[in-house]
Length: 147
Image (cartoon, rainbow, N blue to C red; front, side, top):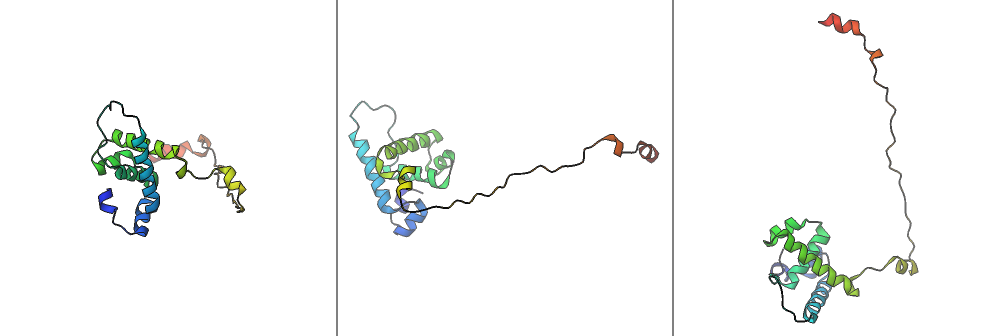
């Protein structure tokens, strides 16, 4: 799934496929692009990223939403597993440092007027008593007579 293939989808289809609304996706792209531009111009080491920011965010969303391994994502994009790992960690760090994409914490949820009910089901296994194996239940005489 690459950006060029899915950018023309309707909003509902886009959300079903990617997991976020197009407006949220564009806000993520804008945040990552701004963060990349703000970095001081140093001598860049290593090879630059081969994919656009949109594709990098799609890789991260695939990893989060579909629980795909980095090996499989790398296979789809034609890059190594370590390159996918670097890309995902880079995007995760940028998005987590910007406070726009964080879920509310426990204290925020407690302040709301909503109440939640939790049902706990005890599904632990209980051991079953079974008869112990010993030699008294076996009659040796019958074994000898079968031969």
